[in-house]
Amino acid sequence: MSGKSTGTMTVTLDGSNKSAKLPLITGTIGPAVADIRKLYGELGVFTFDPGYGATASCDSKITYIDGDEGILLHRGYPIEQLAEHSTFLEVAHLLLNGELPNEQELRQFQQGVTMHTMLHEQLRSFFNGFRRDAHPMAVLCGVVGALSAFYHDSLDINNPEHRRISAFRLIAKIPTIAAWAYKYSIGQPFMFPRNDLRYAENFLYMMNAVPAEPYHVNPILARAMDRILILHADHEQNASTSTVRLAGSTGANPFACIAAGIASLWGPAHGGANEAVLKMLAEIGHVDHIPDFIEKVKDKNSSIRLMGFGHRVYKNYDPRAKIMQQTCHEVLRELGIKDDPLLDLAVELESIALKDDYFISKKLYPNVDFYSGIILKAMGFPTQMFTVLFAVARTVGWISQWQEMMEDPSQRIGRPRQIYTGAPARDYVPIERRKKHN
Ligand code: ACO
Image (cartoon, rainbow, N blue to C red):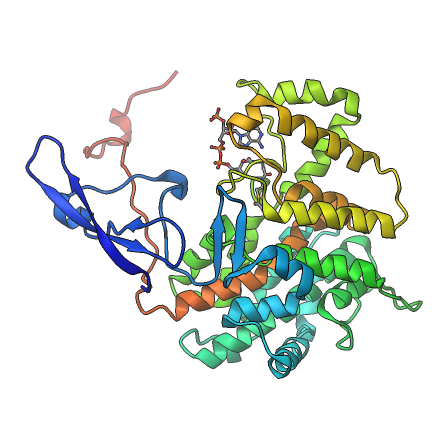
């Protein structure tokens, strides 16, 4: 662990004379953290924190978020600067290796990725095992998990070179798998990756091109795609990243761990939210229906949420949402879409919600997903592909976090405890003596 010890905190057990002195640890920025590892040994009590809202599960040098101020830094660099000046592969290098690459390092890194963009030929037949109408996240999860069965030469998790090659393989192959999942769903031939194209361009090419005619990647859309990938590249210990770390803590191979992350990302409270935003906008249908919808969201007895709003950590505007909103306008302008009813609806919904006491008092602001769905839809992505795209970008963050964990000598298997509220110990009852239920 690399945080600094900056003091102690004393916890006293009421009604007894027992107390424990807990070390306080401080990172580079952010609040101090109480190290509770000795609490059970000294006081015989555990801590209870379902949802881990108040628990740091690791120390990390990769990403910093200040949710109250709406700040997101990768290795110290603000997301706004990275989105404006950097490229996705440069950010991938930064996340994985800790520093922005110089020209030579970037060239080598790009080459390392492009060398691995193709899939093993036998992996192609995996796609045929899925129904054509399978959700592409199901296909992605299955095929990424299956990579462990193909790349035995990079599966020794204790070998740094194997870890490096696995990272390259994952970052390089995930766009190919994602694009093929899409092509499979629409019955078009798979397009092989083109290593003369940049990462985002190649992804758009594999998604949209067909062998029958040449395909030109629109540079403005390629830049927008690159920016979307940057905005989703990492977000510290969110649900899917924590899933990857937890799976990795057992010594599972990186392909299996990333497949676990993909499964976790799929849920509508996490990566599935941008798909859910579009469904919600379609259901609302017209700006005149917004007040009724907002009332339903606020009704305690309804389970309806304003999708794309709220975040576990951000209690302010998600900085990624601002960039996404700007990118959304750029993409619609480039595509010549002047009046997009969904965008008009989203803008109106956002402005009404931001003035509403319910959302203000609960500090609910737009998150990264509020606008991303509109951009992706305008770019021609079907809604089912939205979360897949998120997974393509987040693979870099997952594998960087996994690498960091593997290099941390203090890492142990993740094993949360619980408060047991079930039956106390009791004796087995033979079936003929059990109570009959009507
Ligand atoms: N709409 C309406 N009310 C909401 C919303 C929302 N989107 N989000 C939270 N609330 C309310 C809750 O009902 C709760 O109210 P209560 O205190 O009266 O019970 C309060 O705000 C706190 O909500 P929690 O669920 O405890 O907050 P949590 O931090 O656990 O949830 C989450 C965060 C899951 C993102 C939530 O805000 C949500 O469901 N948002 C919609 C889905 C979404 O956009 N997810 C994307 C997240 S970003 C990402 O993964 C990239």
